[in-house]
Length: 488
Image (cartoon, rainbow, N blue to C red; front, side, top):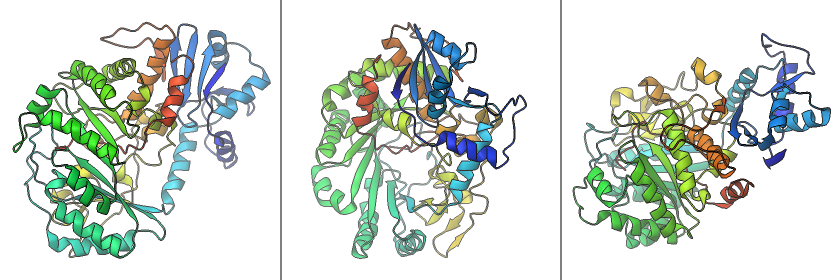
């Protein structure tokens, strides 16, 4: 057995505490000292055995065929081996309802007053691009009502926990078409000595060296997300910029480099569907060649949903594996955050009482997907009203309760659930694709067009070197989780 990633401590203790408290027993409950495989394991077959990943503890181990049979209870295992696997979260007592245990832990964590406040602020609904897939399509384009700035600051002050972290996420439309709002809000916060950080979701077209030098510092911009839809011809055809056309793709690439060299993290969102997927592999090579030495530039796949040419879940996993295989340094594709992330206590901001989205009219929403639709608002800045009752209630589909990836997505995007769109978060495909990539490095043969070899879960670099590379690569990306990417 080779432990590639050591699992975080405490899972066995959490299970013991849950069982002691009288947790429900499973139907096939045996004796308390009998250990069985965790329900939160994803197993990727390899030529000589398997890679087994635990989605709560993040343990990743390489097992021989004989060891895999022992894990599954088909061969006798010694007490020493059982103790090691239990510590990693691979084995749990047979009478444990792991789903109930995890959900109880998450429920208790959600009740705590978390020391942060996250605001998505729409500076404008106007945009200089006309992306066909934008979920804000049909929303009236207008600027932020400056009469709402004072009520916004009041709202912010009253909800920011003492000593808490304030995270401002500026988006639109194209947020840089409304910089005056960012100026006024950040200037007021600075004057009052309220610490904050800014995350900018932009198409990048309005970024200049002068803007970076004169504004980004004052706005405390730590991270910028910029979307690419393909190589030059495809990108320009999909974006359909109103004010910039010829050569915009080349200029966007230069702007990414300029932002990164200003010591700001750049997260390149790659919008992928069936029509541009092969081209995206070429784009990956271009990005790595250009930004390979810039540690604060990373990229990640964002599969378009709700469109006619979207990919199936199996196709997404296969394509992520191909993306990893295409790269010299897989760590640039931001996999570390997925592999090493702590279990989620909620799926997204829609269930988070510390996160809000504000539109240009001062309407308050549960999440960014509703912005521009006042009938979906849960309140307003002025005159102030807010109704949050039931917001933190979590309703999981049965398929999610039985899924090994529940700790990574907590039931998936709530907005997608309401529109009968795909629930699964990108974490699932990133982890499945990465382990398949590791298996390929160990000699597994894959069908390039359809699927990976049979995996268990429920179901990767042969020595764990790529995993270690992921630890050191830039990993600060904050997933925006849109059912259809916004105009950016």
